[in-house]
Every structure is written in C-alpha cells, then in structure tokens.
Length: 188
Image (tube, rainbow, N blue to C red):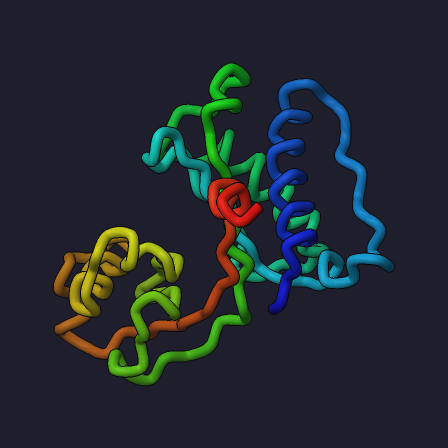
C-alpha cells in the first residue's frame, strides 16, 4: 500500500488524538475519504508506543473490516490501554510516548524458511491453537538473523525457541509500511 506523507501524518495525528480522547471523552472526526480514499481501504495495522526508546505498548489487527483510519485509531487506544505486558498508559505519560504505525499487507503463506527476508517480512505463526506475530522491523531493531527471528516467533507463540527446527511450521508472512512521529519529524 502506498501512503503519502500527508496520509501518514493524518494517521499519526489520529492515533495520538484517539488516545487523548480516550482520557478526555469524545470521538475523533474522520477525514475526507474522497480526498484520502486510501484511508478508507480495509487493511490490518499495528500501533507501537515507545517511551525513551523502550516498548510501552503494541497492539493491532492482522486484517480489518474497518477503514484503515478507524483501525489505526482503535489499535492506538488498545496499545495504550490493553497490552497485557504493560500497565495502562496514564494521561500524564502520553506526552512522553512516541507513536509508530505499521500498515500491513494481506498475509501470505510461507512454504519454506528460505522465503523469509529479514527486514521485509513480518511473521505470523499459527500452530496447535497458538498464534504469534512479529512485525518486519523487529529483527532489524534487535539485529536478529533468520534463525534468531524464527526462535523469537516461536517464543512469542508460547513454544521453545528451537521449535521451528523440529518441523516446518505453519508460517505466514506479510509486509508493512512503517512510519513514526520521529521519522516524519526528521523528514520535515
């Protein structure tokens, strides 16, 4: 999916405003979908919150039947309030949090581990009733090679790190358009 800088800015501002309105009450105004039709398309998205370079919350949707704009807004509030790994974000913390958005492609099956491209493919593991997801930027940020990335998706899904060596796992891949407040600030 192609997004203009303006569309990225609209989504980032909407994510922050959605969290603000969670505390203050009210609803966010939707954009002019005639002017920005891509924001009405149905696409999965994740919102990642960071505080001083450390993860503070990350939740999203692999696929969505809602417009991308609404999906991002909902994911932002969920990342701030419902990530079970963290306490809910307080209103006072909001100003110190940076926001990153990942707009996902449709997932596609990976037939072999050889198909995985570090930095390009996110992974979804579905095995024995468990599911885990890692965004494509995760192995780059943590300087993982393919084996470490496979270990990480196994751990995220509740398996032992080397579980992928025992059998060919049911993996799906996806790509993502990733952008953040920090990166947009540097561009402007």
